[in-house]
Image (cartoon, rainbow, N blue to C red; front, side, top):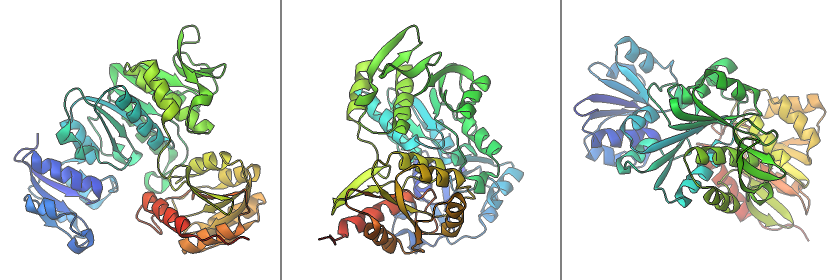
Length: 457
């Protein structure tokens, strides 16, 4: 598709590097562009350079590079109002995201998952279900492994499970999963998308090309996702942890089942699902509905739900020291995600909260904190003052500041925690004010925790 074409790739994070490599494999003339200098990449671009890519680095005006280009491929971090995107459109140059191009080159069955929360857990779980069913499976997308990085290995019988963000859907046009899911919708990324209406519309784009025998799996319990069914042009199945649905995955008498209330298959006991919490029950139900739509046998799903231990950085147990359990929920990057984390706490907990400002209203979280066993809060980062004001407004006063000193925040939390309690990192914010990404934040948290020495007699 791109053989002999001239392509500018904008943004040299993981997805940008991966798509540039795929383009070179497909015979394109590739120019890669980033505002960072070559020395900032620690050799990550050496293979591209050796393969013939032109490097335009430390470039502040990439729109000047577009003359003569056949396509512009942007990383998810590049917004659609970027000057290069607007200039490309004015010149009639096709603009697409890394995921869009990867889809056009990929083979096999594509299933895709979006939503505000639970995407990574559900994507990973569904990937394990397909692997346990004997299918060669690639788990890619917003989860951290670029879609385009797996394309060259794909064969017609393979399965790709792709986690999709709203950013990725800004630059999609032909993207077309055979099975897709929208897990839930709550306020997030308004600093980029502006309004909830636009954010919801971008999430809904995951199934805009799905027709006929395709499937979309929707959350019956979420009024926003429930409403999406009226605009689906394909088959719709549901999942619900609280209601019996017309068709899909739900709970009856403590059992996870799939089908209709009159005719269903039993998958397993809800209590057998290894990962705890109602939010993870919902994730398991969504994965069950998607797997069933793909024809995976119930015993395979049952085995996977019983054995899947969750994902890194999502309510991940790190260590117990002096009777205090440390839990890494660095993937708690928005209000709803952290609400699920604090609800999962069943011991007095010191919560580390705060980070990059996404223009979020923290009131629902702060009210939830009053109902949960959150003994104290350590505030960090850009949103610390806003969080302090919101906590005070709802009547919660047991907070302290650690500024931008992350090690100090962890040490303060440990000092304030009592034996039999928890220290929970669930910031409810993105990480970009202090870290490269939430994964780096989570890894550094675990490094600090594992280096702590016991202080109690």
